[in-house]
Every structure is written in C-alpha cells, then in structure tokens.
Length: 142
Image 1 (cartoon, rainbow, N blue to C red):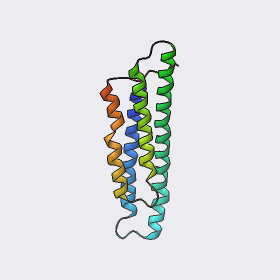
Image 2: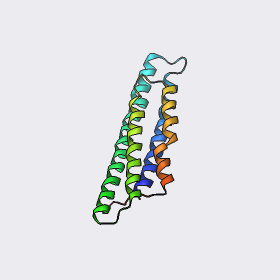
Image 3: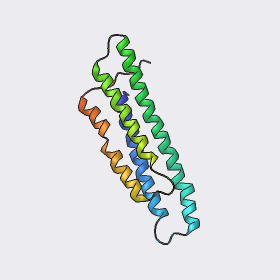
Image 4: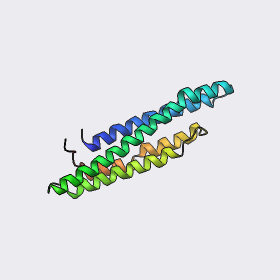
C-alpha cells in the first residue's frame, strides 16, 4: 500500500471514530440521563474513543514521516520527482490539521463540538490536495 492509500485508510478510521464519539456524547448528554450514567458512558464509551483517536493521529504522523523519508531516499538515488515531496508535504499538513482538530476535544466537549471537528475532518483539504496533485508519494523501500 502506498502512503496516499494508507493516509486515506487512516483518515476513514478517524472519521468513523468521530461518528462513534458523536453518538456517545449524544447518549451521555441526552435528556434524563443520570449523573452515574453520564460517568459510566464517559468512562466506557467516550474515553476509549479518545484513545483510539490518539492512535489515528500517531498513524497519520507516521505515514507523513515515512513519505518524507521515502522521498528523500528516492532523491538520493536520483529517482525522486518534486511531486513526491509535494505529496509528502500534503501528508504532513494533513497530520498537523488532524492534531489541531482533535486537540479541541475534551471530556467536557459536547456532540456539537465533535460534529464541528467531524465536518473539518471530512473536508480533507490536504488529502484532496494530494489527490489533485495526481502525485503519489515515493514508496518506502522495504
């Protein structure tokens, strides 16, 4: 799998987690939910999603780093094009954007805040830029 494909896969995983987070926050903050139930939902549903979102952020950063490394190696071998570096930069910008988006979510966040993050996440400006380049990041040498 190349870096762009992996970035799209990780992006989809994050989008799915955000949808799960929204549902959990709506359950937690719904009418008639007792304080004990709110705490249970936070501990059993919300917290694990936050942890999984952190894993997605790590995977997103890893893909960007690997793409940069592959582009540099290809350049050293005389095989890289500028599009490989542009693609690697797009992946890095995507990782930074996602980190900023997720950083605003806390245990005090409500579903509306999570929906706002989801909207920005789903816009995928840097992944769309990557697709628009028609470029593929250099493949990692294994």
